[in-house]
Length: 402
Image (cartoon, rainbow, N blue to C red; front, side):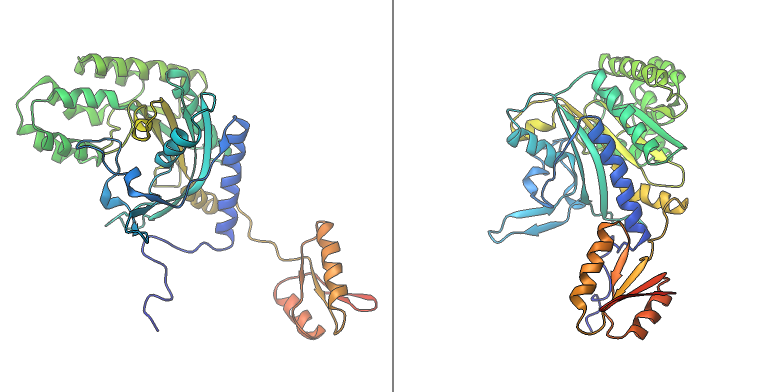
């Protein structure tokens, strides 16, 4: 026997029974909300050309790391990847297929992404996501809608204890550009902040000239909280771009607080990302009972330029698998119900039994057709499966209570 025949690839797993019910329930709750808010569903291929995700030029921030993607070769030798991200294919679709659509364009999706997570025990390489993209809308109103909608999505999934952290790439971006060092060091600093390796960050900054920018970057990951965080940041950040970003966050925070989200929303100026396409506000969401990032979103105003169209955009995705695990852990999903009736057919009455089965199904009764050739076997099966009744459909219908 081939050694891998009985197992799934690393980073994937089978879903059974209650897990499937929970996944469907979470997906239904989210997509129903998105439809009610005016979003239309799109689906993109499970495979895309790698060109859609790779770098156009050195330093292209809209690209994804090549090592994170599952790669394939088509029959013409072209490099494909299994969809590693949902936003980039939707940007492609919008720029090409929806050129004449009235702006803004509101799209939602519910589909898998595939990302290679080397060395991250317990992390899945296949993740089911549901999310929205608001394309052709710039400004604070669109940002506010997306963050508020992400909070409502968590509430609709039954998450009572959740938090959303908001930041802005303009704060760190302004500081790192003004830092007196080379590009490799800037990239290393970016990586250390993203991974929250604060001790290593401090050690690296100690090797650089002591400047206001270096001190601000050293303190940035610890700037976490409410409006007081912004006041402290203003003392450290003197560039125009950073100041504009802080003002933007201040207005967003006030608006979200007015919506009753002051207890759930936190400002996190250490929220930075490498090799991603965000250009403005970014936000992440977490729920009690899950160690994963459940919501991931932000503004990406330059991404559609990769596909020949310049449009502002903002959106977010929800890790439905993480939501599913919490729903199961809290016992919010009942196990599958057994059929109420098993329909048995004596020899020569199979068609009669199938017609009865159809009749019962149309009445909303959960029922199952017996594939056994004898009533005795059918009764034994019904008892084992906790099916309450067996209908024996011959010239007349006999009902057997279990």
